[in-house]
Length: 306
Image (cartoon, rainbow, N blue to C red):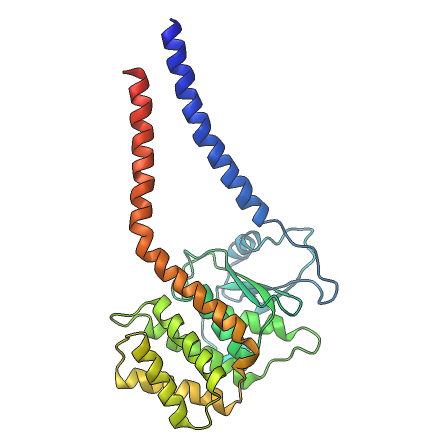
């Protein structure tokens, strides 16, 4: 009887340990979801919902973005007129992805939080950040969510519309258009054989960093920078794809977009992407370690009763 009690006590101790770890993880996650206080300097956060959302989907999106009945936020909807106004897009587009944008103090940079990454199928955090820097948005916290699976492109329109509402923050429409072009090229290249989202983001970021360093004066200078970075990263791109990049960054040069102002953010983006690539390489080993842990745990519990 005494030995049986000890066995049960040992088993319960193991189970309690596992549950306590899970509880701590959940508590930590909950802390991150706490809403920040309102920045009186820049006003309340602005939430922009995709026009294609049904009433039920809109309510679900509100919960995803942390918008409650007593939340102090400004709410609006991105429409067909907005997609034409900001990116000269197709007014027939269905817009589901929504965004909450909170303006911040200088120095914090662009912070992207995909609340539903499983439903944003083509655009990564770094792709959004890169496009926003191109559009001229340098300081903001952006939460993005969609209740259904979407590419994620239309969230940009909502972000632009929200940012445009701020005092003295009107965006240059030429820059928002070229930023959208950048995002389209990025998601297109990521589907090519031998490419992926991280490699494309790393390429675009490194090109921008070199533009900031070299301040190219001609289209030929742009082409040289693009070619050098493709070679450095050991990527295989067709002449057609290279031309897309030549034209994209030449247009940025013509718009006199100064990446020197956001060079520190570009360097941070590059580090984030490189970290993701390293993590992806190590994922297999990590998953094997987790599997071994639980396998050993189960064997230990079995051993107690054997």
